[in-house]
Amino acid sequence: MNLDKIISKKTLFEVGAAVVIVYLIIHYWSIAAHLLSNLWKAVLPLLIGAVIAYLLNILMSFYERHYLFGEKSRRAVCLIGAILTILAIVALIIGLVVPQLTKCITQLVKSAPAALERLFTNEKLLRLLPKQALDWVTNIDARINQVDWGALIQKAFNWFKGGATGEKLTNFLSNTISWVGSVGIGIIFAIYYLSSREKILSYMNRILRRYLKASLLDRLFYYGHNLNETFHKYIVAECMAAIILGVLCFFPMLILRIPYAGMLAVLIAIMELIPYVGIALSTVVGFIMILSESPAKAVIFVVLVIVIKTLDSNLIYPRVVGSSIGVPGIVVFAGITVGGSLFGLMGILFSIPFATALYTELKRRLDEGSQPAHVGFYNRLFASDNTAKLSDQVDRIVRSSALEDAVEEAGAPSDTVENAPADNG
Image (cartoon, rainbow, N blue to C red):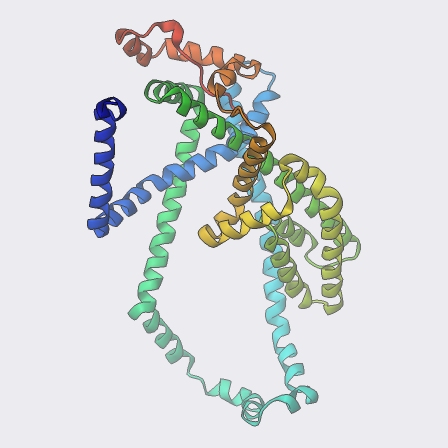
């Protein structure tokens, strides 16, 4: 058997180029790491914009399905409606949280001296303290009066200004400003993308179809389609479950006259989006806040949250979220553990949809056996009834674009123009 027939020149060139690139990266790792870091900084705003666009698209697509005032104004009105909805939610959260948080801090400052006085006059506690700590506690007033606060503030300022701490503070402020700028650019990118979504998708679809093999195209669209559906279902279900839990906590707290009922209900709903640890953190914060006004109500609050969360986990959450993602709890827990260890909070938030998509695909392969579902998926996706309306729009866009002229000049017939992927938002 001739070796040239088995290994083509193109394959040898690709393998050789890959080996050379790997060698250069390893040998010049510092330079490669610097280039990768700069590339990440350059791409980060676009990635943030893609996430924002995906979340906005869920709302925008919902509004578009229920819009009744004509096709021309549908996109603009629904996009503006989605943005205003997000802004209204943020304003509502700030309006509920900030006033009550300010009230809580003020109450803590006012009650701190009396609480410290009760603490220092507690004979049982004083007996437990060592002699040195007892002397320090009994003379605390004199020690406070002897402090030169001006010199202390100046020393703290000099400490932050110079040395490693000052450098860390400068880096923190620089990173914060950079993130704010990236988010701003991401928002602009998301708005531009959503305003001309079909046109961008048509170009991307034609580029992929031209330069990728049919088998790779099937896999790409199959896994992308499944991952998109999983993310969409999970986000919608989690938001619904969080709102339900917040409402279930709000009314009992209002009836029992627990302080900061509105703020704590909003906090519980937001933190519920963080799996497992979110509800615990919100309960601890609520307990500390209520403790400043009434220790008895703080205990009642903790018991109430535990009872409501137990009922929610066993009755409501499985029906709202469980039916949407349909995976065992061990898969969710494993995804959260791995995602949190690798990528922190963002890993925790995105680990469940990824773990769900992986579990679903493995289960499907075990159940179906021989024929992979991704074979021919590209053609099945664009032949489905769900994409008919979008296909017509994309055809009109592509036929009127300059890209269509370039394709025709290259010899490709115009009737082979394929449609962009359907939006599952």
